[in-house]
Image (cartoon, rainbow, N blue to C red):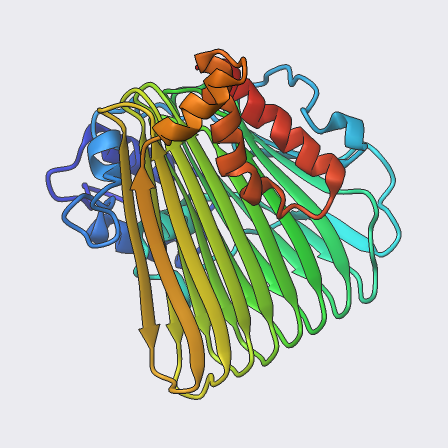
Length: 412
């Protein structure tokens, strides 16, 4: 690859192109993906859907060095007590569990997906397709129901960039609890692309926890195809970073599919957290519930963008979306953009959004009953966020999330 593919390239883009050119092996499709990315560039605030999360601005002066091969010591997970089947992606390098493969499951390291037609206009997904070297593949066999949760730990420690993909297939009538954590004090850029397929009658409970360093830039995209009578439940908790964006794209391809998407952002300092989703209802009688709660203090920024799209033949859809934010300081921000795009005429779809401060009357009531101001504020915030955590079906995972929530509240 000779010459720059970018117009007026930034230092980071020059580093990306050099890293891609230095690779010993890349497919033709990956080369085409890199060229597509070079034409698009990183999203900036002028692009609809990215005006509150400017990746171009955040990355333009970032260190371009690729330190993804660094070897580090990994501390035990916050979920170790649950005895999960643990996978690690450390600075982009995949580590498989050092134990026998459970019955009803297959996993391994695969070649990455080299093209995604539905995401070719998504610049960061296109870059991920070009740059990812290997992917983690997990398949849950037909009818299998695993009591042990599957844990995928994304651990990033460097100041460069790393890319990874995960492919999960949940077969007919299979069930699995999946936990993902984003960890590490690094100040680099990490991109993860998650492909999920839920076959007929399958069920996945996915929980996501991000608690990375304040200087890290994270983009995580989960693209799910949901078949007939399948169920996709997802709960996410993020304390943000310099810039973090968690995207969920779910396509309901068959009737009677359902999903619950709950998310909570707890941001302080100058941290930024963006939860963005797009749910496409293509067939009849699908049901979606989405709830977002954001709490911001100091100069923290909480972003929520959710879109429900209903095609003309997708009648009898039941979809409701709610986004609420608490602002604990005058400089904190909440940016919400809920959307409905409906072409069917027999549906029940709704959305709502609120933002405000803690209720002074409620604070006064609690203070009069012996609580100091800090304890009273923490109790009200805990109650505000509780509905999100309550959506986790596994009590052990829910308790671990509550501990993380209380740690953040105690740090106020």
